[in-house]
Image (cartoon, rainbow, N blue to C red; front, side, top):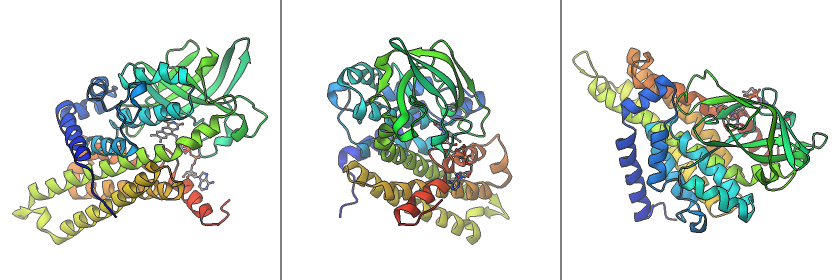
Length: 383
Ligand SMILES: Cc1cc2nc3c(=O)[nH]c(=O)nc-3n(C[C@H](O)[C@H](O)[C@H](O)COP(=O)(O)OP(=O)(O)OC[C@H]3O[C@@H](n4cnc5c(N)ncnc54)[C@H](O)[C@@H]3O)c2cc1C
């Protein structure tokens, strides 16, 4: 058993840390959160540093790295912000879906644009009446001559309104069929005529944003269909473990960011003439937080490693998604306690970390749905 990262991976982590210190200092993160603006210059810095190219093959403009490399990057970005990491991970796992399921022509067209930072790719599946229950999806794409016409409404689409974003849109192409046999994936530019986007007023992740999308006779050409007609579910399932690995890395990195802030505060803040961290109540709380995040990290790395070997790791990655997200929410809550009134005040960073944390047990599948899946894999027949 070897838990060590390679020298290259340690250097990669160090270089991402430096990139974040340079391009996303605290005032930058606060400004984009406050003004709810997409961190475009940071995204371009990711591209310039080759981070977007990392897990893609060289023939498509990639750097030939691994899923683990991508996970290291995501963890390190999230240590600065769970909001800003959305400008990295979503693009990568949507791009990896394209790599797995796109035609050679589609890969040659889209992937070099993504790795160069010319475009972004987001995912949109959820609808107002189809959240956990994807089968209730109603948005359709129907053939009309040599085009597809899309009608319907999507919601909670992270980063959909970012500049030059292309939406990985899952819709029903056979409304009568079960969604596993009747759903398809299309790539739709976010400025296509007939598509209206609205940035939603969310508790957190305010820079990268969460959107409502309304499709009113949006027309796309057949080359925008990825993975074949009615094969959307295959695409989703083929990329599920990678999506969860990315979200786990974000949770662990962001939880570490909470601990960094709370620990420093406990050393600096004096009450009764001494640092609050000299109170065992606070010191033990921080020790428990650090221990739980370390446990989450270990679960995440083992699951991500299993996924990277190509083995079936649905059980492990689902457990990791559940545990890393629940741990992140828990330590964000505890971190706020450590900072007292300064934690609860929007003029200081902990309030943002707390707000951003709360999405993690809901987005990319709720904790309840992860538990259902784990229980079903244990042979229990959860309804
Ligand atoms: C910040 C954020 C970003 C998101 N980004 C995206 C995105 O980019 N693309 C996208 O497509 N979607 C995205 N989502 C949507 C997300 O995947 C859904 O919110 C999630 O799947 C839950 O769906 P819902 O909100 O409709 O809740 P519901 O499905 O209505 O669930 C409500 C509650 O009931 C519980 N519940 C429902 N069914 C069951 C069951 N069978 N057993 C036990 N409990 C159950 C849920 O766990 C939850 O607690 C995002 C959501 C958030 C909050």
